[in-house]
Structure formats: C-alpha cells, structure tokens
Length: 119
Image 1: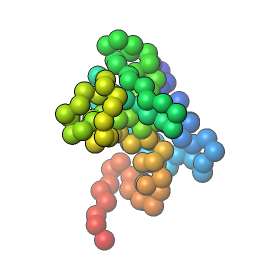
Image 2 (image 1 turned 60 degrees about the vertical axis):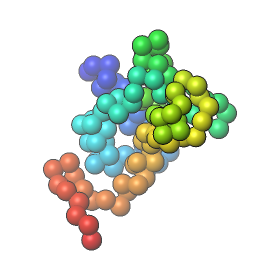
Image 3 (image 1 turned 120 degrees about the vertical axis):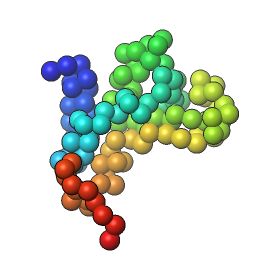
Image 4 (image 1 turned 45 degrees about the horizontal axis):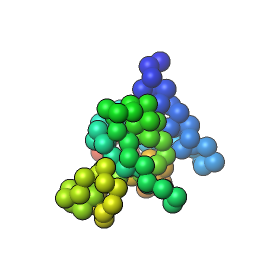
C-alpha cells in the first residue's frame, strides 16, 4: 500500500466513523479520483478557530495531511484577485469537505460504472 492509498483509507475511515458508513460510490470516488488533483499548491484551510495556509512546496507533509483530512479547502479568494496566502478576502472557490460530499450522495444509487440521469 502506497502513502497515497494510506491517506485515502484514513480519510474513508474518518468519514465512516460515527456515521452509517461510507457508501460504496463515495469510497470508489475517493479512490478513483484522488482529492489532491483538485487542490492547488497553495490553499487555505479554515475552521471555526483559524485559517491556515497550506503550501505543498514549503511543507508537503502538512499539505498532504490537510488534503486528506475532513476539512474544506479554500482554493480562491476574491475571484482570484487576492493571493490565497494573504488569508484575507471573500471565499470564492473551495474543495468541499469530503463528508459533505458523502452526505449529498446518500440518495444516489449510482455506481462507478453507471451514470445518473436527471429525473
């Protein structure tokens, strides 16, 4: 098992803990479409207490840990007008917390090999 596989498994376990469990389509999505492909080199993790800049080049361990955590990751401020490292501006783009995506997919019977169609 690679480091990435361990990170993904850890995230799946964290999402499943205290919940009904990770639905198979969400587990497949996390494994087949790794979250790190959608997180820029520099991003912002914000929780109720603080905002933390993550930088893959300066601190790759912290960046990877944040990417495969249950936190939402802010990827843009002020429609890109404010550098993310400034940490001061309106949040205009983010990568949702994985658990939020898990809950939004709770009613979807989709599998990785099928497509959902509008009803």
